Image 1 (spheres, rainbow, N blue to C red):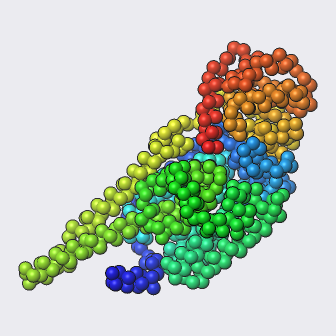
Image 2: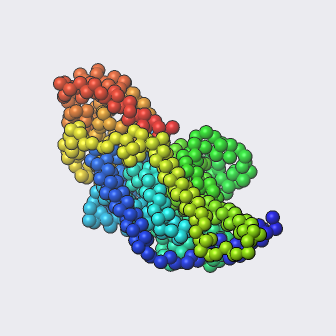
Image 3: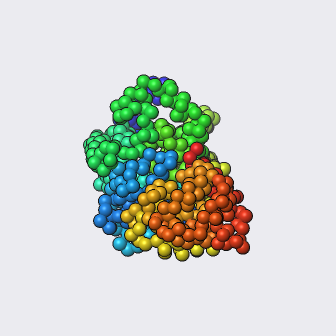
Length: 593
């Protein structure tokens, strides 16, 4: 025991992560690097095609692709990250019909340089492709880091593949565009430069990470403490902590002035803990057992943690000194009153993913070290037995030809195979929204005749008109000053565009959606401009039409608007509408429950 304590002390004195020795770039390195590059290119091509197909097939969302598109577009049209899209039924981010600044929700200054992309191509697809390019690049630092830690280029390739195939990463990329999703790659670059002690590049990527979302400051504080304790780099560690606190102060000031209520509109997700950061901290510190029971051991929260860790075969648990870096974000997700944040889906796990990849690398290093230590012990025992039976010493060559290396290589290969197998299994078991063809419930987004007809309705809405529309239509109309997520802004919006066969989010029940549309038609403030194949375009102040007889057909059931559409398409009964809306609503309910 005394020897173990002494070993730990010596290790801490030298630093658990000393400056790595450079590895020669041999032929094996370039072949392995080439394989990783091919995997990255395949990822970029596949996801670029898949996500643009989603946009063409109206499978993207107002929250949040429409929000981000409008905010970034507004920067080039005289407004400061202006957004008017919000969920007026079940969320807390709606404040007024005039909209709010994006900084009232999140502090994301990286959107300023991203907006320059719209000078070249002003389209939501540009954001999604940019996101794919940035996230795909994260496979390179994963490969470089694993190569240095395992001292083998071939052993590093599976970690690049793990990164590219990681379901939580693909969730984030697959779900519209978010600035924080970029941190999946940016934080891995930062971790690589932290380990290699390239301080300038490390701070560059840390600042880029901070610019993606205000919550990244918590991870940066942990990086600072990690650097102090495990690398013993005092100036770098203290500098990181100071940078994080300064950035947080700037972010809070910006949010205070941008928000109509003086703070982020999303803080209500934690209001049950207290009305200020101090009260929240006191609640957590004074009720730790209750917090753990309700937000860690509770079944849905426990499932969230299991899904995150299972995707890497639970290997990150073997490296808690790395896993602790994710504790600030895990706390935000677990303590939130919004179930989406601990659902395992969407963008909320972005900065956790690179830490899980790093932890998986360190866990593998630990396993290899343990095997090497055990084999060395057995080798010493055999040498002692051999010295007792013969006076001939064991040659260096015979030691090199011992089975120890073969055993280590075999165990390493098994660990890597197990890790990649778990990624595949996790995708097929949990990843119902995955973009991978082998995932459960995978459907390639196809552009239908119904989708093509949408452009006919979109063209009838003037660019300067305000419009309230459904979530799937929002990203196709979001480059304007005022765009709302139906049913927000009824009576205020110039136009209302509906798709009776599309997603009815944020309505939880299709009956409520149908009843709302029926009320609008009965009230008479909006007249029918055009209607075909379940699309309905209404204009405020438009002369009344002969739609009144059809109101009797609008029942508060799943085929109510189908009957309304049948006036114009009587030869198409559209029998699948009920089933289509049932599937769509089930997806929405999963997101809300």
